[in-house]
Image 1 (spheres, rainbow, N blue to C red):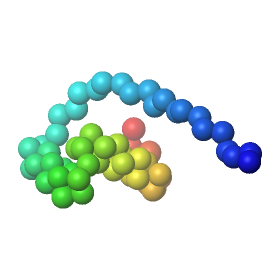
Image 2: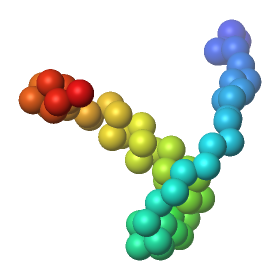
Image 3: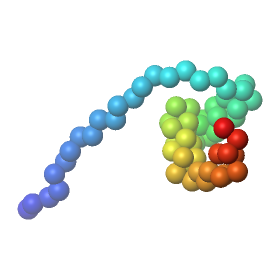
Length: 64
């Protein structure tokens, strides 16, 4: 029986420091705990979702 090949994929991670409002960090912590995932995983998923659904406002581009 020929099956699909199993391939191991390694995700490269980079350490980065961000400052966030305490209330946001607290909410991220509670949300992650309720979903039984790490805060790090929640932040990654949230950032990916935000970037995939980002709509840039052309009006704001002219202000630079």
